[in-house]
Amino acid sequence: MTAATAPNQPQAGAPKAPDAATGSHRRRSARWSYILLIAGLVLMIGPFLWMILGSLKPAQDFLRNPPTFLPSEFTTSSYGRLLDQLDFPRFFFNSSVIALAVTIGTLVFCPMLGYALAKLPWRGKGVVMGVVLATLMVPAGITLIPNFVLMSNLGLVNTYPGLILPFLVGPFGVFLMRQFMLSIPDELLEAARMDGANEFRVFRSVVMPIATPVLATLGILTFLGSWNSFIYPFVMAQEPQMYTLPVALATFSTGQYQADHGMLMAGSVVLVVPVLIVFILFQRWITEGIATTGLKG
Amino acid sequence: MILFGVFLAFPIIASFGLSFTSFGLTDLQNPIGATFVGLDNYAALLSDDRFWKSLFNTVYFVVIGVPATLLFGLLIANALNRGVTRFRTVFRVGYYLPVITSIVAIAVVWRFLLNPDVGLINMALAAIGIDGPAWLANPALAMPSIIVMAVWRNLGFAMIVFLAGMQAIPASLYEAASIDGAGRWQMFKAITIPLLRPTILFMTVITTIGYLQLFEEPLVMTDGGPLDATLSVTMYMYQQGFEFFHQGYASAIAYVLFLIVAVIAFLQFKFLRSDD
Image (cartoon, rainbow over all chains, first blue to last red; front, top):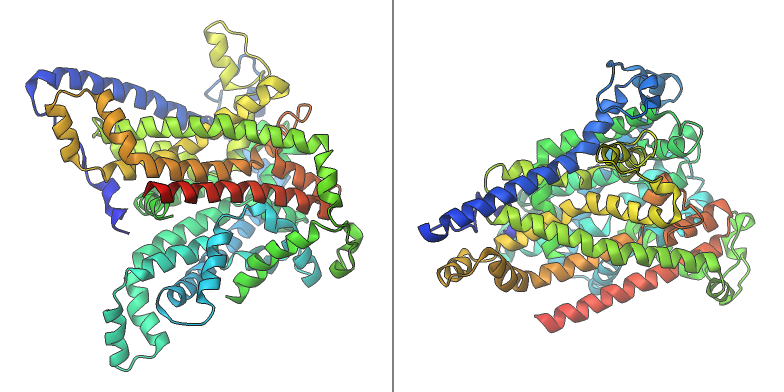
């Protein structure tokens, strides 16, 4: 986990144009870098701006040829249609409940399993670790059908438990926590045990506080992953009242509302903006977590 | 532990079993009673034109999309690591933004961007005198359009990982090279790329595994069309399993995909081991 601090150190690796002879050349190429990076940035942000502006356009703006970037007048009528014609608050609620439950479950179960795999001796540990590693690589599609069959037999299709249970423990979270727990010195745990703490107490009072930064990263990534997840809820939520936001948006954008550009843009905004807020608030945790886990994988 | 077993390990094994049966809608209530058909599903796959088409499309997407994504990610990371120091956080956040955004929302927005009548892209082309085509309705252009979108969405992830890798390279190496008169391009080629090799390899593998599972983009943007030009393996599996209710057959498709992923993962580990 040592790489975590690297990305935010200002210009960690950059030598500061030491000799005057190459200085002007370097400045010139730096200027080109800036120009290209800013042009790229416009391309990256452009679709998001277009989405937000599009959600505020009146319906007739979408019939114009050539199309306009700015709305002719700002209106929230597209958002009104999300409420009147579709039950978007309900989808928002579903997405929130599921994402929160999955995040809490992950933060409770993954550290436990990670701790057991990293620090406790037990029979079959190697097998379980092998299974965790193997499932890290498994495409989501492969568990889709058996999970669906399982859920149908448990009567959990179209229910919150059906949408939440399979994601309470993910191999990514277990692996991440195990890797982190390995870095905790055994002496620390031994000291706590000597003081008479039982295994659960050691876990709760020694391990968990040390793990807080990793837990924060895992929690944010899990929340975002669940909020955006699609293929599983798309299959498992078959009644509109159980749709999550991505399922609702995909269903309506290919169905009867596919021509209502304004409403679909507004729906996209509702789906994207909470994520943007979380991301901008926590961007350090997220990008560092990605970089770290990426390199550690 | 138990949850993990029930919802992850079990389905993987069950899926393998299912792929040998003629499991269909009527078997849902009684999974054990499904008829065992041996390798029939796999045999049928071999002569299924739509399956081959979907496999071809997926490979096309991976072969063009993965190198493009990594190349852009690498160039941006390099620019941010060497030279560009002001506003670095703004650039990082900006380029990373699409990665954390729902693919569904992005696909909806891009469908409108690519729309020949009301889309921004053809408007921009018209401004420089080009009459833009109907991107998603043209079988030859639909997949390239989806590739461009995927590269746009995922290059930020590659950028973040490469940037972290680059910052682990000691600055003294660049200083020494600079004293020897090496230019930026030479340093990039002789220092950055070789030292970043494990990271590049790792990114190649996880990007490939991710791209092999292409699903949301064609579902929202083209529904696999036109003429199955964007039908991906995962999408075909979904159609077989949840539109035609041939779950046994769909499981066989899922397993072929799994095998491809497993082979790639295995090759990676072999590669990495010989590397270290």
